[in-house]
Image 1 (tube, rainbow, N blue to C red):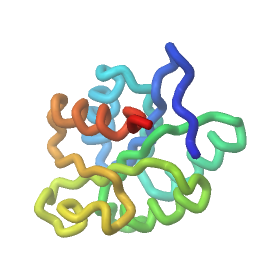
Image 2 (cartoon, rainbow, N blue to C red):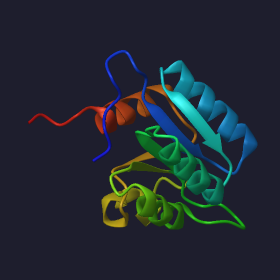
Image 3 (spheres, helix red, strand yellow):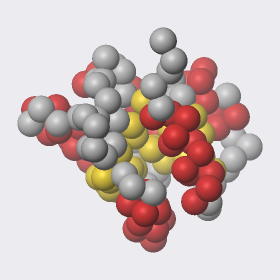
Image 4 (tube, rainbow, N blue to C red):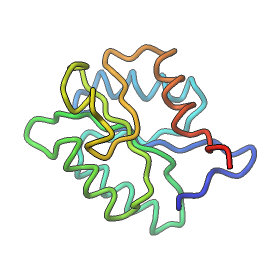
Length: 137
């Protein structure tokens, strides 16, 4: 099981999007919300970042994965690879196609939430709070 950050420590997020503007704005929003963010432009880079973090004993609390990346791994393929490294990694699917069946039925595809693009700060904050808040025992 992925440990929660120690008191006073910020959650670390892996943020994947192939569009530089979306990656930049999304990472800025996440930092504004108080999260340490590792922004990457591909599924392959996400897998490498998670592997490196685990090798260095660092925790990544969740990943926000763009569903469609032309000429690269999709969000689903990326999630499969990430779960080989950390089966408990919490993953959020992200897409500009909010009505895509994967986004509307995200749990059937291994995700625990969906957040539509363009990002709204309040939506992102609500989803992350729900995803990262430990369930009551």
